Amino acid sequence: VQIVRTIPEVRRALAAPRTSGRRIALVPTMGALHEGHLALVDGAKGGGAYVVMSVFVNPLQFAPGEDFERYPRDMEADAAMAGERGVDLIFAPETGEMYAGEPEVTVRAGRLAGDWEGRVRPGHFDGVLTVVAKLFGIVQPDVAWFGQKDLQQALLVRAMTRDLNMPVGLEIIPTVRDVDGLALSSRNRYLSSAERMRALALSGALNAVKASYDGGERDVEELEYHGHAKLLATPGIKIDYMAVVELQTFRRPALLAEAGAAIGAIRVGGTRLIDNVLLGPSTL
Ligand code: PAF
Image (tube, rainbow, N blue to C red; front, side, top):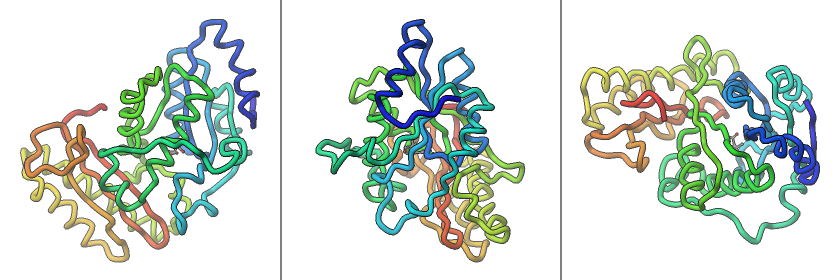
């Protein structure tokens, strides 16, 4: 796999595949790759596209006091995994390549970002959308691949491409999980084995909500009750939120009549984990 660090190098590397008419697919990541990222690569490779992976820990999406400094970085391992899976080009810029100075213009997330991750992490989605918009400008992909694990993020990126008329198709693929149900996340590597056991309460809680939904329950308080009960029964975790929302608006209705999702965020020790399951449709 070819690794480039600068924007002109990306443009040069993409000239040949673009002229030969190959579709360009982008898989944006912050590195610390796991099977969840590699499933995005598999999807992107599927149509015979030329696959670009970005590896960039974006300072703009971390608030002071979050884990920007300690976020795992391992370029060598990432390049080996990405190369083996068939990524054609890795774009791994230094911070200065992406942000030469304080940006004058950024993307502001709208109402869809008003709650949940957006409330717990103010400014986070503005940072995400700004860097994704920049990556779209740099790579000019035909299609970009995102994971359902960061559901609110994926829906916001979709809203951005729609509202800003960006000519990029979006693919959102299901969350990849360990055999015990824990959603794969780069942050799982922060967990001790005792913490990892406790972290399972999150997928357990979301599944409890889904079981109730599949059993016919549509009252949102009732649905959420099952999730909260599971989380509250697990000592040593802190609940940021556990809720049922409509997919369209990411708002919490009284009754779930539309396609929805159970979403949750917890803290286990110093690690913050998020997860979700869809209620109703099985794809996004
Ligand atoms: O999901 C992530 O890893 C990041 O938020 C993204 C989309 C790569 C933007 O920095």
